[in-house]
Length: 615
Image (tube, helix red, strand yellow):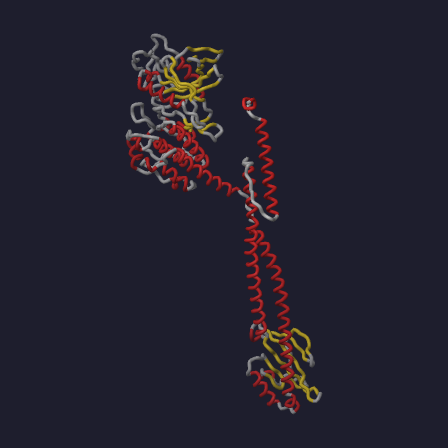
Protein backbone atom coordinates (compact mmCIF):
# COMPACT_ATOMS: atom_id res chain seq x y z
CA UNK A 1 0.00 0.00 0.00
CA UNK A 2 1.39 3.42 -0.97
CA UNK A 3 1.87 5.71 1.97
CA UNK A 4 -0.13 8.96 1.53
CA UNK A 5 1.82 11.99 0.74
CA UNK A 6 2.38 14.26 3.69
CA UNK A 7 1.95 11.46 6.29
CA UNK A 8 4.77 10.06 8.42
CA UNK A 9 5.39 6.46 7.28
CA UNK A 10 6.13 5.37 10.90
CA UNK A 11 2.70 6.42 12.15
CA UNK A 12 -0.22 3.96 12.09
CA UNK A 13 -3.15 4.41 9.77
CA UNK A 14 -6.34 4.98 11.74
CA UNK A 15 -8.40 2.83 9.40
CA UNK A 16 -6.09 -0.15 9.88
CA UNK A 17 -7.65 -3.14 11.65
CA UNK A 18 -4.56 -3.50 13.80
CA UNK A 19 -4.57 -2.42 17.39
CA UNK A 20 -1.50 -0.30 17.89
CA UNK A 21 0.13 0.69 21.17
CA UNK A 22 2.07 3.72 20.10
CA UNK A 23 5.67 3.60 21.39
CA UNK A 24 6.58 6.36 23.82
CA UNK A 25 9.14 7.69 21.34
CA UNK A 26 6.41 8.20 18.71
CA UNK A 27 3.48 9.34 20.88
CA UNK A 28 4.20 13.04 20.42
CA UNK A 29 4.61 12.65 16.64
CA UNK A 30 1.42 10.62 16.33
CA UNK A 31 -0.48 13.10 18.48
CA UNK A 32 0.83 16.00 16.41
CA UNK A 33 -0.31 14.28 13.24
CA UNK A 34 -3.73 13.57 14.72
CA UNK A 35 -4.10 17.12 16.03
CA UNK A 36 -3.25 18.71 12.67
CA UNK A 37 -6.28 19.64 10.56
CA UNK A 38 -5.45 19.42 6.82
CA UNK A 39 -5.76 22.63 4.89
CA UNK A 40 -7.90 22.94 1.79
CA UNK A 41 -6.16 21.48 -1.20
CA UNK A 42 -3.76 19.37 0.79
CA UNK A 43 -3.40 15.78 -0.35
CA UNK A 44 -4.55 12.96 1.91
CA UNK A 45 -5.28 9.34 1.09
CA UNK A 46 -7.25 8.26 4.14
CA UNK A 47 -10.60 6.52 3.72
CA UNK A 48 -13.68 8.53 4.68
CA UNK A 49 -17.37 7.78 4.60
CA UNK A 50 -20.11 10.27 3.67
CA UNK A 51 -21.44 11.99 6.75
CA UNK A 52 -24.96 11.14 7.75
CA UNK A 53 -27.59 13.81 8.02
CA UNK A 54 -27.13 16.03 10.99
CA UNK A 55 -23.43 15.13 11.51
CA UNK A 56 -20.42 17.19 10.63
CA UNK A 57 -17.74 15.40 8.68
CA UNK A 58 -14.64 14.88 10.82
CA UNK A 59 -11.56 13.64 9.04
CA UNK A 60 -9.95 10.46 10.36
CA UNK A 61 -6.56 11.11 11.84
CA UNK A 62 -7.81 14.32 13.39
CA UNK A 63 -9.21 15.33 16.75
CA UNK A 64 -12.00 17.77 17.47
CA UNK A 65 -11.14 20.98 19.27
CA UNK A 66 -8.30 23.45 18.81
CA UNK A 67 -4.53 23.17 19.06
CA UNK A 68 -2.81 25.05 21.88
CA UNK A 69 0.88 25.72 22.42
CA UNK A 70 2.41 25.80 25.90
CA UNK A 71 6.03 26.63 25.25
CA UNK A 72 7.53 23.59 23.54
CA UNK A 73 4.47 21.51 24.36
CA UNK A 74 1.56 21.10 21.97
CA UNK A 75 -1.84 20.17 23.37
CA UNK A 76 -5.29 19.82 21.84
CA UNK A 77 -8.16 21.39 23.70
CA UNK A 78 -11.10 19.03 23.27
CA UNK A 79 -14.05 20.19 25.30
CA UNK A 80 -12.73 20.59 28.82
CA UNK A 81 -9.92 18.11 28.22
CA UNK A 82 -6.36 18.91 27.24
CA UNK A 83 -5.34 15.99 25.01
CA UNK A 84 -1.58 15.43 25.30
CA UNK A 85 -0.41 12.09 23.88
CA UNK A 86 -1.72 9.14 21.95
CA UNK A 87 -1.59 5.96 24.05
CA UNK A 88 -2.91 3.43 21.54
CA UNK A 89 -5.53 2.73 18.95
CA UNK A 90 -7.78 -0.03 17.65
CA UNK A 91 -9.98 -0.63 14.70
CA UNK A 92 -12.87 1.17 16.41
CA UNK A 93 -11.34 3.87 18.61
CA UNK A 94 -8.15 5.70 19.55
CA UNK A 95 -7.05 6.32 23.14
CA UNK A 96 -5.27 9.49 24.23
CA UNK A 97 -3.75 10.75 27.42
CA UNK A 98 -5.61 13.87 28.50
CA UNK A 99 -5.78 16.20 31.46
CA UNK A 100 -8.99 17.36 33.08
CA UNK A 101 -8.08 20.78 34.56
CA UNK A 102 -11.40 21.00 36.37
CA UNK A 103 -10.37 18.32 38.85
CA UNK A 104 -6.64 18.27 38.16
CA UNK A 105 -6.61 14.65 37.02
CA UNK A 106 -5.06 12.84 34.07
CA UNK A 107 -7.41 10.48 32.24
CA UNK A 108 -7.40 8.14 29.27
CA UNK A 109 -9.93 9.42 26.73
CA UNK A 110 -11.17 7.18 23.93
CA UNK A 111 -12.60 8.68 20.73
CA UNK A 112 -14.62 6.69 18.24
CA UNK A 113 -12.87 6.76 14.89
CA UNK A 114 -14.11 9.52 12.65
CA UNK A 115 -14.70 6.98 9.90
CA UNK A 116 -17.25 5.20 12.15
CA UNK A 117 -19.03 8.31 13.40
CA UNK A 118 -21.35 8.28 10.40
CA UNK A 119 -22.60 4.80 11.37
CA UNK A 120 -25.61 5.53 13.58
CA UNK A 121 -25.71 2.00 15.04
CA UNK A 122 -22.02 2.12 15.86
CA UNK A 123 -22.33 5.53 17.53
CA UNK A 124 -25.33 4.49 19.58
CA UNK A 125 -23.77 1.21 20.71
CA UNK A 126 -20.54 2.98 21.66
CA UNK A 127 -22.39 5.52 23.79
CA UNK A 128 -24.92 3.08 25.23
CA UNK A 129 -22.40 0.51 26.30
CA UNK A 130 -19.92 3.13 27.47
CA UNK A 131 -22.59 4.57 29.76
CA UNK A 132 -23.45 1.08 31.00
CA UNK A 133 -19.78 0.39 31.76
CA UNK A 134 -19.62 3.78 33.46
CA UNK A 135 -22.18 2.55 35.96
CA UNK A 136 -19.79 -0.15 37.20
CA UNK A 137 -17.76 0.53 40.33
CA UNK A 138 -15.43 -2.33 41.20
CA UNK A 139 -11.75 -2.37 42.24
CA UNK A 140 -10.91 -4.68 39.31
CA UNK A 141 -12.84 -2.79 36.62
CA UNK A 142 -11.46 0.30 34.96
CA UNK A 143 -13.35 3.40 36.08
CA UNK A 144 -15.26 5.35 33.42
CA UNK A 145 -15.37 8.98 34.50
CA UNK A 146 -17.29 10.58 31.65
CA UNK A 147 -19.17 9.66 28.45
CA UNK A 148 -20.43 12.03 25.81
CA UNK A 149 -19.84 13.66 22.43
CA UNK A 150 -17.59 16.53 21.43
CA UNK A 151 -18.26 18.00 17.99
CA UNK A 152 -20.28 14.87 17.10
CA UNK A 153 -17.30 12.67 18.10
CA UNK A 154 -18.36 10.12 20.76
CA UNK A 155 -15.85 9.67 23.57
CA UNK A 156 -15.41 8.09 26.98
CA UNK A 157 -12.98 9.33 29.63
CA UNK A 158 -11.56 6.53 31.72
CA UNK A 159 -9.19 5.93 34.57
CA UNK A 160 -5.56 6.25 33.42
CA UNK A 161 -3.87 2.98 34.34
CA UNK A 162 -0.20 2.64 35.17
CA UNK A 163 0.71 -0.89 34.17
CA UNK A 164 0.93 -3.34 31.28
CA UNK A 165 -1.68 -5.48 29.58
CA UNK A 166 -1.53 -9.24 29.96
CA UNK A 167 -1.09 -9.41 26.19
CA UNK A 168 2.26 -7.63 26.56
CA UNK A 169 3.23 -9.75 29.56
CA UNK A 170 2.39 -12.99 27.72
CA UNK A 171 3.83 -11.87 24.39
CA UNK A 172 7.03 -13.90 24.88
CA UNK A 173 5.07 -17.10 25.38
CA UNK A 174 6.26 -17.64 28.95
CA UNK A 175 3.95 -19.04 31.59
CA UNK A 176 3.22 -17.00 34.71
CA UNK A 177 3.83 -18.20 38.28
CA UNK A 178 1.02 -20.33 39.68
CA UNK A 179 0.15 -18.01 42.53
CA UNK A 180 0.12 -14.89 40.34
CA UNK A 181 -2.17 -16.67 37.88
CA UNK A 182 -4.63 -17.72 40.58
CA UNK A 183 -4.65 -14.27 42.22
CA UNK A 184 -5.36 -12.57 38.90
CA UNK A 185 -7.96 -15.22 38.10
CA UNK A 186 -9.78 -14.48 41.36
CA UNK A 187 -9.86 -10.76 40.59
CA UNK A 188 -11.03 -11.40 37.04
CA UNK A 189 -13.82 -13.72 38.23
CA UNK A 190 -15.00 -11.21 40.83
CA UNK A 191 -15.00 -8.38 38.28
CA UNK A 192 -17.04 -10.47 35.85
CA UNK A 193 -19.45 -11.53 38.59
CA UNK A 194 -20.01 -7.87 39.49
CA UNK A 195 -20.61 -6.91 35.86
CA UNK A 196 -22.92 -9.84 35.22
CA UNK A 197 -25.01 -8.96 38.26
CA UNK A 198 -25.43 -5.51 36.72
CA UNK A 199 -26.58 -7.00 33.44
CA UNK A 200 -23.38 -6.45 31.46
CA UNK A 201 -21.60 -9.23 29.55
CA UNK A 202 -18.12 -8.29 28.44
CA UNK A 203 -18.05 -10.47 25.29
CA UNK A 204 -14.35 -9.87 24.69
CA UNK A 205 -12.36 -11.13 27.68
CA UNK A 206 -8.76 -11.59 26.56
CA UNK A 207 -5.25 -10.63 27.75
CA UNK A 208 -5.38 -7.39 25.77
CA UNK A 209 -8.35 -6.23 27.85
CA UNK A 210 -6.76 -7.05 31.21
CA UNK A 211 -4.20 -4.65 32.64
CA UNK A 212 -1.89 -5.59 35.50
CA UNK A 213 -0.94 -2.52 37.49
CA UNK A 214 2.63 -1.79 38.44
CA UNK A 215 2.08 -3.12 41.95
CA UNK A 216 1.98 -6.55 40.20
CA UNK A 217 -0.90 -7.60 42.47
CA UNK A 218 -3.93 -5.84 40.99
CA UNK A 219 -5.60 -6.21 37.61
CA UNK A 220 -8.18 -4.04 35.90
CA UNK A 221 -10.60 -5.30 33.27
CA UNK A 222 -11.11 -2.77 30.47
CA UNK A 223 -13.48 -2.23 27.53
CA UNK A 224 -16.65 -3.67 29.03
CA UNK A 225 -19.22 -4.27 26.31
CA UNK A 226 -17.19 -2.51 23.61
CA UNK A 227 -16.98 -4.37 20.27
CA UNK A 228 -13.33 -4.06 19.27
CA UNK A 229 -11.70 -4.82 15.97
CA UNK A 230 -8.11 -5.53 16.93
CA UNK A 231 -5.27 -7.58 15.57
CA UNK A 232 -2.78 -7.53 18.40
CA UNK A 233 0.06 -10.03 18.26
CA UNK A 234 -1.52 -12.40 15.79
CA UNK A 235 -5.09 -12.21 17.06
CA UNK A 236 -7.88 -12.09 14.51
CA UNK A 237 -10.85 -9.80 15.00
CA UNK A 238 -14.32 -8.92 13.83
CA UNK A 239 -16.03 -5.62 13.20
CA UNK A 240 -19.28 -4.43 14.66
CA UNK A 241 -22.23 -6.06 12.96
CA UNK A 242 -20.40 -9.38 12.80
CA UNK A 243 -19.71 -11.87 15.59
CA UNK A 244 -18.38 -9.78 18.43
CA UNK A 245 -15.18 -10.77 20.21
CA UNK A 246 -11.70 -12.14 19.54
CA UNK A 247 -11.88 -15.61 17.95
CA UNK A 248 -9.14 -17.27 20.03
CA UNK A 249 -11.00 -16.37 23.25
CA UNK A 250 -14.60 -16.83 22.09
CA UNK A 251 -16.96 -19.34 23.64
CA UNK A 252 -18.51 -21.98 21.38
CA UNK A 253 -21.83 -20.13 21.39
CA UNK A 254 -20.07 -16.91 20.34
CA UNK A 255 -18.45 -18.54 17.33
CA UNK A 256 -21.88 -19.39 15.88
CA UNK A 257 -23.48 -16.09 16.80
CA UNK A 258 -25.71 -17.75 19.39
CA UNK A 259 -27.26 -16.28 22.50
CA UNK A 260 -24.67 -15.52 25.13
CA UNK A 261 -24.67 -14.72 28.83
CA UNK A 262 -22.15 -14.40 31.62
CA UNK A 263 -21.07 -18.01 31.20
CA UNK A 264 -19.59 -17.05 27.84
CA UNK A 265 -17.26 -14.61 29.64
CA UNK A 266 -16.29 -17.41 32.04
CA UNK A 267 -15.30 -19.59 29.07
CA UNK A 268 -13.06 -16.76 27.87
CA UNK A 269 -11.68 -16.40 31.40
CA UNK A 270 -10.76 -20.09 31.31
CA UNK A 271 -8.91 -19.54 28.04
CA UNK A 272 -6.99 -16.65 29.63
CA UNK A 273 -6.15 -18.81 32.67
CA UNK A 274 -4.93 -21.57 30.35
CA UNK A 275 -2.68 -19.12 28.51
CA UNK A 276 -1.29 -17.67 31.75
CA UNK A 277 -0.49 -21.18 32.98
CA UNK A 278 1.06 -22.50 29.76
CA UNK A 279 2.18 -19.46 27.79
CA UNK A 280 0.10 -20.49 24.78
CA UNK A 281 -3.52 -20.28 23.66
CA UNK A 282 -5.56 -23.49 23.85
CA UNK A 283 -7.18 -22.95 20.45
CA UNK A 284 -5.03 -21.91 17.48
CA UNK A 285 -5.53 -22.06 13.75
CA UNK A 286 -4.76 -20.49 10.40
CA UNK A 287 -8.17 -18.88 10.00
CA UNK A 288 -11.20 -17.78 11.95
CA UNK A 289 -13.11 -20.80 10.64
CA UNK A 290 -10.49 -23.31 11.80
CA UNK A 291 -10.27 -21.65 15.21
CA UNK A 292 -14.05 -21.64 15.57
CA UNK A 293 -14.20 -25.33 14.67
CA UNK A 294 -11.58 -26.20 17.27
CA UNK A 295 -13.39 -24.21 19.94
CA UNK A 296 -16.68 -25.93 19.15
CA UNK A 297 -15.44 -29.50 18.59
CA UNK A 298 -11.93 -30.13 19.95
CA UNK A 299 -10.35 -30.27 23.38
CA UNK A 300 -7.11 -28.38 24.04
CA UNK A 301 -3.90 -30.09 25.07
CA UNK A 302 -4.30 -31.31 28.63
CA UNK A 303 -3.02 -28.77 31.11
CA UNK A 304 -1.01 -31.29 33.13
CA UNK A 305 1.13 -32.05 30.08
CA UNK A 306 2.11 -28.39 29.65
CA UNK A 307 2.17 -27.41 33.35
CA UNK A 308 2.83 -30.52 35.48
CA UNK A 309 3.26 -28.48 38.67
CA UNK A 310 -0.26 -27.05 38.47
CA UNK A 311 -2.48 -28.42 41.27
CA UNK A 312 -5.10 -30.91 40.15
CA UNK A 313 -7.83 -28.64 41.53
CA UNK A 314 -6.63 -25.78 39.33
CA UNK A 315 -6.59 -28.01 36.25
CA UNK A 316 -10.17 -29.08 36.96
CA UNK A 317 -11.22 -25.43 37.29
CA UNK A 318 -9.74 -24.49 33.91
CA UNK A 319 -11.29 -27.55 32.28
CA UNK A 320 -14.68 -26.68 33.73
CA UNK A 321 -14.42 -23.08 32.52
CA UNK A 322 -13.76 -24.31 28.98
CA UNK A 323 -16.55 -26.90 28.93
CA UNK A 324 -18.41 -26.78 25.61
CA UNK A 325 -21.99 -26.74 27.02
CA UNK A 326 -22.59 -23.59 29.12
CA UNK A 327 -24.51 -25.58 31.74
CA UNK A 328 -21.33 -27.57 32.51
CA UNK A 329 -19.31 -24.44 33.27
CA UNK A 330 -19.30 -22.38 36.44
CA UNK A 331 -22.67 -20.68 36.53
CA UNK A 332 -21.38 -17.41 37.99
CA UNK A 333 -18.18 -15.50 38.51
CA UNK A 334 -18.62 -16.00 42.26
CA UNK A 335 -18.50 -19.78 41.86
CA UNK A 336 -15.30 -19.46 39.87
CA UNK A 337 -13.77 -17.03 42.36
CA UNK A 338 -14.65 -19.27 45.33
CA UNK A 339 -13.06 -22.28 43.61
CA UNK A 340 -9.88 -20.29 42.88
CA UNK A 341 -9.74 -19.03 46.46
CA UNK A 342 -9.58 -22.65 47.63
CA UNK A 343 -6.75 -23.34 45.19
CA UNK A 344 -4.93 -20.24 46.42
CA UNK A 345 -5.24 -21.49 50.00
CA UNK A 346 -3.85 -24.85 48.87
CA UNK A 347 -0.89 -23.18 47.13
CA UNK A 348 -0.17 -20.95 50.12
CA UNK A 349 -0.41 -23.89 52.52
CA UNK A 350 2.01 -25.89 50.38
CA UNK A 351 4.42 -22.95 50.23
CA UNK A 352 4.12 -22.46 53.98
CA UNK A 353 4.83 -26.14 54.55
CA UNK A 354 7.93 -25.93 52.33
CA UNK A 355 9.22 -22.83 54.10
CA UNK A 356 8.19 -23.87 57.59
CA UNK A 357 11.21 -24.72 59.78
CA UNK A 358 11.69 -28.41 60.29
CA UNK A 359 10.73 -29.11 63.88
CA UNK A 360 10.38 -32.25 65.93
CA UNK A 361 6.92 -32.30 67.53
CA UNK A 362 6.86 -32.18 71.30
CA UNK A 363 5.13 -35.53 71.53
CA UNK A 364 7.92 -37.12 69.47
CA UNK A 365 10.61 -35.45 71.55
CA UNK A 366 9.05 -36.62 74.77
CA UNK A 367 8.54 -40.14 73.47
CA UNK A 368 12.13 -40.38 72.20
CA UNK A 369 13.55 -38.86 75.37
CA UNK A 370 11.66 -41.15 77.70
CA UNK A 371 12.39 -44.14 75.48
CA UNK A 372 16.10 -43.29 75.52
CA UNK A 373 16.13 -42.88 79.29
CA UNK A 374 14.33 -46.16 79.83
CA UNK A 375 16.59 -47.90 77.29
CA UNK A 376 19.75 -46.69 79.04
CA UNK A 377 18.50 -47.60 82.50
CA UNK A 378 17.16 -50.96 81.42
CA UNK A 379 20.29 -51.67 79.39
CA UNK A 380 22.60 -50.98 82.31
CA UNK A 381 20.38 -52.96 84.64
CA UNK A 382 20.20 -55.89 82.24
CA UNK A 383 23.97 -55.88 81.75
CA UNK A 384 24.72 -55.89 85.45
CA UNK A 385 22.02 -58.47 86.11
CA UNK A 386 23.25 -60.76 83.34
CA UNK A 387 26.85 -60.59 84.50
CA UNK A 388 25.89 -61.36 88.06
CA UNK A 389 23.63 -64.14 86.93
CA UNK A 390 26.40 -65.68 84.85
CA UNK A 391 28.85 -65.41 87.70
CA UNK A 392 26.35 -67.14 89.98
CA UNK A 393 25.79 -69.93 87.47
CA UNK A 394 29.54 -70.31 86.93
CA UNK A 395 30.04 -70.59 90.67
CA UNK A 396 27.37 -73.27 90.81
CA UNK A 397 29.00 -75.17 87.95
CA UNK A 398 32.44 -75.03 89.54
CA UNK A 399 31.05 -76.20 92.84
CA UNK A 400 29.38 -79.14 91.12
CA UNK A 401 32.48 -79.85 89.10
CA UNK A 402 34.65 -79.82 92.20
CA UNK A 403 32.30 -82.23 93.89
CA UNK A 404 32.42 -84.58 90.89
CA UNK A 405 36.20 -84.51 90.76
CA UNK A 406 36.38 -85.33 94.48
CA UNK A 407 33.91 -88.19 93.98
CA UNK A 408 35.85 -89.68 91.07
CA UNK A 409 39.10 -89.40 93.05
CA UNK A 410 37.57 -91.15 96.05
CA UNK A 411 36.01 -93.93 93.92
CA UNK A 412 39.35 -94.77 92.30
CA UNK A 413 41.64 -94.25 95.31
CA UNK A 414 41.92 -97.99 96.15
CA UNK A 415 42.67 -98.92 92.50
CA UNK A 416 45.32 -96.22 92.33
CA UNK A 417 46.81 -97.44 95.62
CA UNK A 418 47.10 -100.98 94.20
CA UNK A 419 48.14 -99.55 90.81
CA UNK A 420 45.29 -101.42 89.13
CA UNK A 421 45.27 -99.04 86.18
CA UNK A 422 43.08 -101.34 84.10
CA UNK A 423 40.27 -101.01 86.61
CA UNK A 424 40.80 -97.27 86.68
CA UNK A 425 40.66 -97.08 82.89
CA UNK A 426 37.47 -99.18 82.78
CA UNK A 427 35.83 -96.84 85.30
CA UNK A 428 36.86 -93.78 83.26
CA UNK A 429 35.44 -95.18 80.04
CA UNK A 430 32.12 -95.89 81.74
CA UNK A 431 31.99 -92.30 83.00
CA UNK A 432 32.80 -90.87 79.54
CA UNK A 433 29.83 -92.74 78.04
CA UNK A 434 27.56 -90.14 79.67
CA UNK A 435 29.03 -87.49 77.28
CA UNK A 436 28.80 -84.91 80.06
CA UNK A 437 32.59 -84.59 80.31
CA UNK A 438 35.19 -83.22 77.94
CA UNK A 439 38.02 -85.30 79.41
CA UNK A 440 39.11 -87.32 82.48
CA UNK A 441 42.78 -87.98 83.27
CA UNK A 442 44.34 -89.92 86.20
CA UNK A 443 47.94 -89.08 87.06
CA UNK A 444 50.22 -90.99 89.48
CA UNK A 445 52.50 -89.46 92.08
CA UNK A 446 55.35 -89.25 89.53
CA UNK A 447 53.22 -87.07 87.21
CA UNK A 448 52.75 -89.76 84.56
CA UNK A 449 49.36 -90.28 82.98
CA UNK A 450 48.10 -93.77 83.86
CA UNK A 451 44.51 -93.62 82.60
CA UNK A 452 42.73 -91.07 80.39
CA UNK A 453 39.76 -90.60 78.12
CA UNK A 454 42.36 -89.64 75.51
CA UNK A 455 44.41 -92.86 75.33
CA UNK A 456 47.24 -91.06 73.49
CA UNK A 457 48.23 -89.40 76.75
CA UNK A 458 48.69 -92.66 78.68
CA UNK A 459 52.31 -93.36 79.65
CA UNK A 460 53.44 -89.77 79.03
CA UNK A 461 54.15 -87.07 81.55
CA UNK A 462 51.10 -84.87 82.10
CA UNK A 463 51.27 -81.41 80.49
CA UNK A 464 48.41 -79.11 81.54
CA UNK A 465 46.79 -77.01 78.71
CA UNK A 466 46.99 -73.23 78.52
CA UNK A 467 44.43 -72.11 80.97
CA UNK A 468 42.83 -69.25 82.86
CA UNK A 469 42.81 -69.85 86.59
CA UNK A 470 39.41 -69.54 88.24
CA UNK A 471 40.55 -70.06 91.82
CA UNK A 472 40.63 -72.93 94.27
CA UNK A 473 37.74 -74.72 95.86
CA UNK A 474 37.56 -76.39 99.21
CA UNK A 475 39.38 -79.69 99.48
CA UNK A 476 42.42 -78.39 97.60
CA UNK A 477 40.48 -78.42 94.29
CA UNK A 478 41.96 -76.23 91.56
CA UNK A 479 39.73 -74.81 88.78
CA UNK A 480 40.51 -73.14 85.47
CA UNK A 481 39.13 -72.39 81.99
CA UNK A 482 40.75 -73.74 78.86
CA UNK A 483 40.09 -73.85 75.13
CA UNK A 484 38.88 -76.94 73.31
CA UNK A 485 40.94 -76.99 70.08
CA UNK A 486 38.98 -79.82 68.53
CA UNK A 487 35.67 -77.92 68.99
CA UNK A 488 36.45 -74.53 67.57
CA UNK A 489 36.15 -71.62 69.98
CA UNK A 490 34.41 -73.64 72.69
CA UNK A 491 35.81 -73.62 76.17
CA UNK A 492 35.69 -75.99 79.11
CA UNK A 493 36.19 -75.73 82.86
CA UNK A 494 38.91 -77.92 84.33
CA UNK A 495 39.09 -79.37 87.83
CA UNK A 496 42.09 -80.98 89.55
CA UNK A 497 41.45 -83.07 92.69
CA UNK A 498 44.05 -85.03 94.67
CA UNK A 499 43.68 -88.82 95.03
CA UNK A 500 44.32 -89.72 98.67
CA UNK A 501 44.02 -92.82 100.84
CA UNK A 502 44.36 -92.69 104.61
CA UNK A 503 45.71 -89.16 104.27
CA UNK A 504 48.41 -90.25 101.83
CA UNK A 505 48.64 -88.50 98.40
CA UNK A 506 48.52 -91.14 95.64
CA UNK A 507 48.07 -88.97 92.56
CA UNK A 508 45.63 -86.58 90.86
CA UNK A 509 42.37 -86.63 88.86
CA UNK A 510 41.90 -83.95 86.18
CA UNK A 511 38.30 -83.44 85.04
CA UNK A 512 37.05 -81.23 82.16
CA UNK A 513 33.42 -80.06 81.84
CA UNK A 514 32.22 -78.27 78.63
CA UNK A 515 31.16 -74.63 79.25
CA UNK A 516 28.72 -74.64 76.27
CA UNK A 517 25.58 -75.53 78.27
CA UNK A 518 26.33 -72.71 80.70
CA UNK A 519 26.92 -70.28 77.82
CA UNK A 520 23.66 -71.28 76.17
CA UNK A 521 21.73 -70.65 79.36
CA UNK A 522 23.46 -67.28 79.74
CA UNK A 523 22.64 -66.29 76.14
CA UNK A 524 19.02 -67.29 76.56
CA UNK A 525 18.86 -65.20 79.69
CA UNK A 526 20.41 -62.22 77.87
CA UNK A 527 17.98 -62.59 74.96
CA UNK A 528 14.99 -62.61 77.27
CA UNK A 529 16.39 -59.59 79.07
CA UNK A 530 16.87 -57.74 75.76
CA UNK A 531 13.30 -58.51 74.73
CA UNK A 532 12.12 -57.20 78.06
CA UNK A 533 14.11 -53.99 77.54
CA UNK A 534 12.75 -53.47 74.01
CA UNK A 535 9.16 -54.11 75.04
CA UNK A 536 9.49 -51.81 78.03
CA UNK A 537 11.07 -49.04 75.97
CA UNK A 538 8.37 -49.28 73.28
CA UNK A 539 5.61 -49.32 75.85
CA UNK A 540 7.03 -46.26 77.59
CA UNK A 541 7.63 -44.42 74.26
CA UNK A 542 4.09 -45.10 72.99
CA UNK A 543 2.55 -44.15 76.30
CA UNK A 544 4.63 -40.96 76.43
CA UNK A 545 3.69 -40.11 72.82
CA UNK A 546 0.01 -40.11 73.68
CA UNK A 547 0.61 -38.30 76.96
CA UNK A 548 2.65 -35.64 75.16
CA UNK A 549 0.01 -35.39 72.45
CA UNK A 550 -2.57 -34.78 75.13
CA UNK A 551 -0.37 -32.01 76.53
CA UNK A 552 0.25 -30.59 73.05
CA UNK A 553 -3.45 -29.98 72.37
CA UNK A 554 -3.75 -27.07 74.79
CA UNK A 555 -0.53 -25.62 73.40
CA UNK A 556 -1.88 -25.89 69.85
CA UNK A 557 -5.12 -24.25 70.99
CA UNK A 558 -3.21 -21.30 72.43
CA UNK A 559 -1.11 -21.03 69.24
CA UNK A 560 -4.22 -20.96 67.04
CA UNK A 561 -5.78 -18.35 69.31
CA UNK A 562 -2.64 -16.22 69.06
CA UNK A 563 -2.95 -16.39 65.26
CA UNK A 564 -6.48 -14.99 65.54
CA UNK A 565 -5.18 -12.12 67.65
CA UNK A 566 -2.45 -11.50 65.08
CA UNK A 567 -5.19 -11.15 62.44
CA UNK A 568 -6.86 -8.45 64.52
CA UNK A 569 -9.69 -10.59 65.88
CA UNK A 570 -9.52 -9.25 69.42
CA UNK A 571 -12.98 -10.71 70.16
CA UNK A 572 -11.59 -14.23 70.03
CA UNK A 573 -11.65 -16.13 73.33
CA UNK A 574 -10.53 -19.60 74.36
CA UNK A 575 -13.26 -19.76 77.01
CA UNK A 576 -12.30 -23.17 78.36
CA UNK A 577 -11.91 -24.08 82.03
CA UNK A 578 -9.29 -26.49 83.33
CA UNK A 579 -8.13 -27.21 86.84
CA UNK A 580 -4.44 -27.07 86.01
CA UNK A 581 -1.71 -24.75 84.72
CA UNK A 582 -3.22 -24.77 81.22
CA UNK A 583 -6.45 -23.44 82.70
CA UNK A 584 -4.50 -20.55 84.18
CA UNK A 585 -2.90 -19.95 80.76
CA UNK A 586 -6.34 -19.87 79.10
CA UNK A 587 -7.58 -17.31 81.61
CA UNK A 588 -4.49 -15.14 81.03
CA UNK A 589 -5.01 -15.29 77.28
CA UNK A 590 -8.67 -14.29 77.51
CA UNK A 591 -7.72 -11.39 79.78
CA UNK A 592 -5.09 -10.24 77.28
CA UNK A 593 -7.59 -10.46 74.38
CA UNK A 594 -10.14 -8.46 76.38
CA UNK A 595 -7.56 -5.78 77.13
CA UNK A 596 -6.62 -5.54 73.45
CA UNK A 597 -10.28 -5.36 72.43
CA UNK A 598 -10.94 -2.57 74.96
CA UNK A 599 -7.88 -0.67 73.75
CA UNK A 600 -8.94 -1.03 70.09
CA UNK A 601 -12.47 0.13 70.92
CA UNK A 602 -11.10 3.15 72.75
CA UNK A 603 -8.84 4.06 69.83
CA UNK A 604 -11.78 3.78 67.41
CA UNK A 605 -13.91 6.03 69.60
CA UNK A 606 -11.29 8.78 69.51
CA UNK A 607 -11.08 8.70 65.68
CA UNK A 608 -14.78 9.00 64.79
CA UNK A 609 -15.59 11.06 61.68
CA UNK A 610 -16.47 14.70 62.50
CA UNK A 611 -20.17 14.32 61.63
CA UNK A 612 -20.54 11.32 63.91
CA UNK A 613 -18.65 13.02 66.70
CA UNK A 614 -20.95 16.01 66.35
CA UNK A 615 -23.99 13.78 66.47
